[in-house]
Length: 101
Image 1 (cartoon, one colour):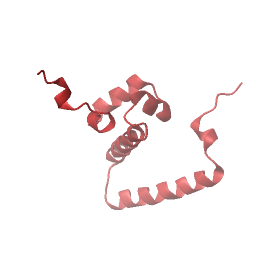
Image 2 (tube, rainbow, N blue to C red):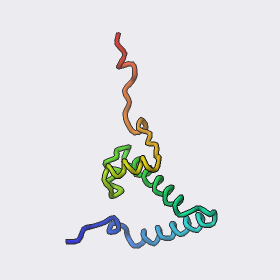
Image 3 (cartoon, rainbow, N blue to C red):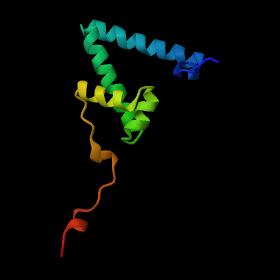
Image 4 (cartoon, rainbow, N blue to C red):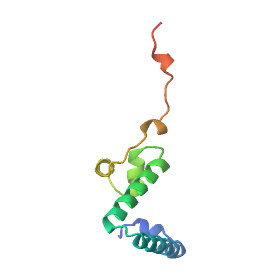
């Protein structure tokens, strides 16, 4: 039995559109002298941040959507110096609740 990948979920039309969009981005990056290393790093950062936002800050779900283990995602976040705004995704408790009377 063959394992399914994310590529199995992409329609041929979406694949052609993605290819076209990527080609435009590549042309613009090359025109501005952006190195491959920098382009890859920035793409990976934006992709990870997008996945974390879509999962409301849940790193396990974000990692699953990226097709990587949660620990791998955590390592990438550290290596790429990605700041995750933890408080943005979580419910906060009013500070007044913790005050003793």
